[in-house]
Image (cartoon, rainbow, N blue to C red; front, side, top):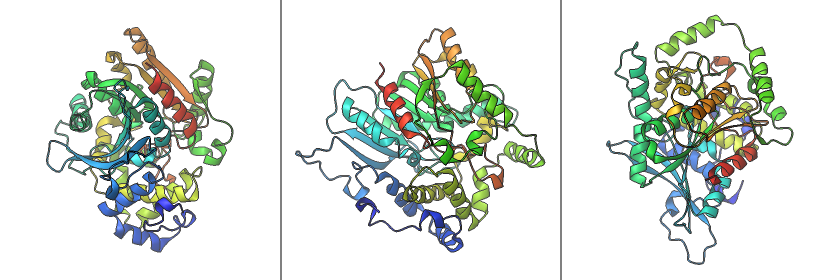
Length: 439
């Protein structure tokens, strides 16, 4: 274990997580704000420039060679007890000509800790450009305040339901921007976070510099996903072989990906019909984990040990602890999902019909083994072009997936939109920096 994490409470080895019944029971009872903060800090302490809470206010020495500094905080919003958990990475030599800061926005039910392998290269960008990088947990998710989530619109009022659900997230993000004091931001959203990034840009267009959408949810008409894709059937070890890279989306490559997805479709089952009913009734997949009492940590352990095989044993252990704490916390923002997406994970109001109003650069990024349909990105780039915005692009990341795999025993794998491209972080990070540097 590194010196940076040696004084934090120990966790069991990753290989023991799925099978340690007693450890799972202890984990259940230890979940809380304090333990959640510890689990997040374990991930963030992998950044050499991260300053833990008890050292956040320590002045930076004039002789320090630290180019950036990072710290976490809770940014209070306008409503009492509403706050967004925030990671801030700032250059110690800010430039008056710096580009707008980058803001990382996680997917459904996840948290800013999922970006821990992306933060180092982005911090280097902040240093080189004299700018800043932020990551936040959406309201009601991660370690942000778990406030009640309600939608007043009637069930058959789809536009009303979507507007209310989107406003819960994008309006709180706008409050956060005001509190932090940012004029413009480049939004880097993953999955449902990418969907909300577009919704924010449509509602607050003057506050967005550009959009970088990683495996965005809710883009095309019809099903957004094809299940199971090769991300679900190939092991992480198989997918990590070979030198990965980012490349512009070519027709031939996209045809092969869609062919692989289509060949993997399954017939609708009784379990799927049941899940469709539960989805329409506002059920959340995380309720299954929380309702399973001490089996919850065990199920999460099965997920993290299988899903993140490309991580080291220590990283797998720490991401397991982090996932467990944010998953077992009080349900809140997760209940948005049935208002935003219909059963089958396709948008009730697809983004492809709305992107033409965007006037900023928009970059769509999909993984080679993604189960988000890249056709949505293709159509969106074309819609942007037809509307006079020639700054739409699309890329494919080789040897990468969506990272949306959940416990197959629960048969909810296309509901759990977790994570970012941990399979191939180098290619993703290189592309992110490239896009951030474009003027």
